Image 1 (cartoon, one colour):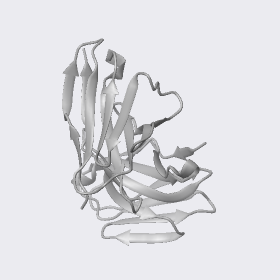
Image 2 (cartoon, each protein chain N blue to C red):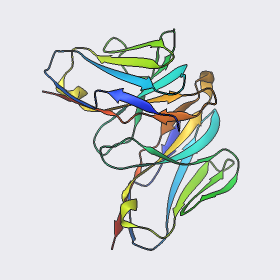
Image 3 (cartoon, rainbow over the protein chains, first blue to last red):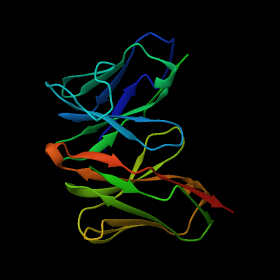
Image 4 (cartoon, chains in turn blue, yellow):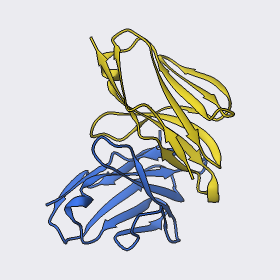
Length: 114
Length: 112
């Protein structure tokens, strides 16, 4: 089956710094990737849709200048949390969609901002 | 916009059957998915319905009624390892994005 990886799997950073999370489709090309955020005991909240070679589409209420998304190739999308604060601590999950519109999830990245 | 509702928590006994309901409202319905998620892990795909009716896959079955905006996930012969959160998600084809929108999830506790 299709595999999606995320790196890092967990990260701890200091308040005010920036953190980059990578999402890769390992054995298929993904023109579209999605970024989700999940707080404890809550469901997945879609943050943005990332399209290869174009600007990401952000969901209402998500700050595009704080959560920078770059989808530079058909197998890689990155999410950069800029000037991170403790309230940004969360589980970030990406998913990649193949040409048949099947969506595959990465294992997630746990971000802790101290 | 979209609105997806599920019960917050459910409890069931090992060996029993449990039904988790999901109601939804969306303008661009393009399929309904059920995922299982254990704490700290990514969601795992369980089932997919795009047409009305029942889809059976081993101990898990999922039902869809598009006219009622309703789906359920049926788990049979419950095992302790089935204790997890179950997420109902609707695929929305609005703006050709085909994005998945998740419900709030149902935490299922299976007791001996």
